[in-house]
Image (tube, rainbow, N blue to C red; front, side, top):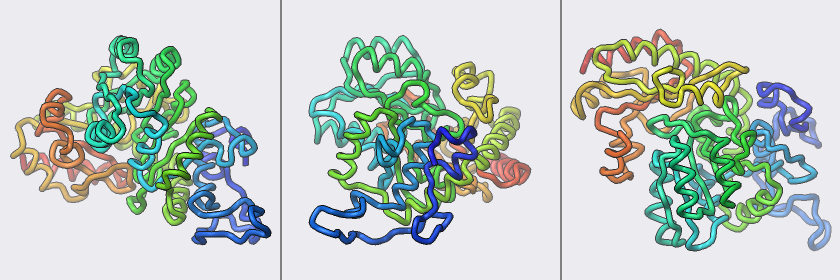
Length: 402
């Protein structure tokens, strides 16, 4: 079903890019595990040749995510409408970087997921000779100046960023990329296409760690890229097959299942996060709360324009806050909560909590963490879909131990 046949994104979560299975009429696409497919004559087949290149379960997921991100490409133009599934979020990032040539310059948001930082600075600088320049892209002038000074071939950002929830003006990044001839890529993992769709702002490629909100149940690992540009889709199609870090059929099935309820889950995530963030802000043992839905957030006005749920501003399901004290207080707090699971990752139906300096961002050099404000008192919370009163009681228990 073409995405332009469906007016509301909640409907596209269920029907976007989907077709009944042609042999049985199955409503949900089956898990096609076959690694290879019969050919009627050498080079003559039914559109499926080898599962790294063609897998019907993966295709169904890729088309649905492309519909949600409003790629604008049809199946006639591009087989999966510009959507591409990978074995992990980092596999998707790595494949997007293969669009570049050795020695090219990448402008990267200064505050990004630790794995992105590690891949760029500790792998691709060495293996591909990439020149990586970190920029605070929350500052439009800083991005404009960096693009003029460094002639980048790619601009890579997250918004909201991980873990300090900085926001980036997507339209400004897109305009900057067009002016300097750079491919623009946005990691949309935190917001999901339910809250923001970067392609609609002119961004070239959207990336997701589907392990997070897209899958939504902490039981699958995957990544995805979506583009609305036919030329980039052709190049990504080649790279996905040539590099080979594809999403497997079981993970594609689970990720597609997750998309079916994404709109409903994001509504609950956002509602509960806003309520908990407001409560945390009033607690005497909490120094500061960062939440895009607050007027105190530096990017609040941008968030109101750029992050929206059913036409209304939404702050997302992630909260970052600073406890009063240091590592000892953080440890006591994190060891005292029970309903919030102390674990890496985010975006699942269950609430998760973590310490970025020790856990998700430990690979970021200490001096860079300090510059970004990733201190020993910083706590990152992924608000799940449990009852918000129970979540508040759990946080209260943790604060009582500090």
